[in-house]
Image (tube, rainbow, N blue to C red; front, side, top):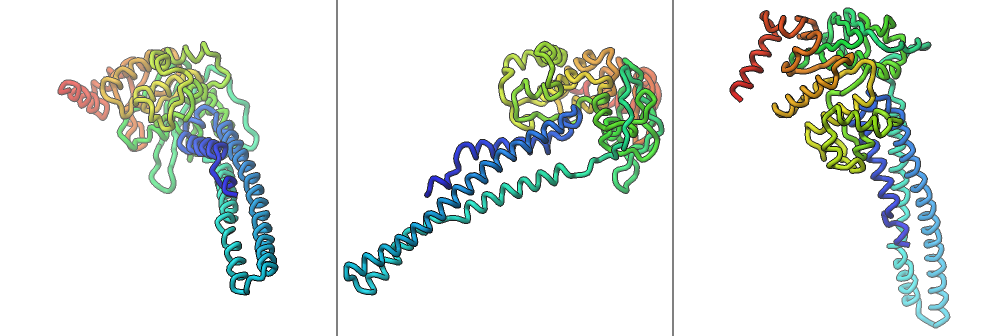
Length: 395
């Protein structure tokens, strides 16, 4: 009965597929939410779990039946050995030894608990997936959502307050306006509330007070999925899924044509890498097979392919070396020309091209204006500009 307990190839493959999909759900949650692909990814994970569960249940039934047959055979064999020993005139001691020997000989073939343990593991995994699916959403959905506004969009942020738990507000009275085609950059120190602002715009955190309006409609009156279909983009920690180059891009546009995919990759200056790597090459999860610059450009191409009415870009040059970051920012500013864009960045080079710069400190707007105006007056922006210039000079 040994072969029934071998970890066969289909089970290993299905288990690996389920593990990869669960990892994608956990680590790629932000990207899945940004491009409205969360339900598709969750459905794919549940389907992988169901297929593995069916295989495990079938295997458990086979193992149980085989082991039951083994136990029956064991008992019948002992009886046969005893009868044969008595018929041949063996003594009581010899008969007992023969019976016990035949009984013990079956023990290695009867690990019935193994099948039960495997099945219990599958049930536990299914329970965890269901618990994840049942986790309450981060924001309250309206009982009767208003219709999604039509493009082009004007985004109005008015006296926005967002608080994480019982701490001080992450955003405290922030206001800004994005009209169609306008590009606004948000800068500030770590913890200033920059990423929280983008999260509020994408409806992944709840608004305490103030308002965000899309063409005059408060986002709290809209389905959060509708909001993210209109206002979304490149997340702070973009995720590479364990899938092909093409599939990683098509996360943002499952129905996109090959021409659209190639155009987005070209605008992100990633076309040479994509052609060299191959569209069908499988990338490892967490971007282990791509460099930091390639990862950010892949995420940018994904955002451009999705082409939302309002494009959000969260620290696209984060953790890149100076040269790579400068090249990426230059390409990004070129690719977003004429697009309604909100760019969160800690790098100031190239920001003279945007329409307005908003400085956040401690969750509040402390400065705003054009690049030339901000470097002309004392404040965080000029200090950062001078520090950046000094670093470049010494570099």
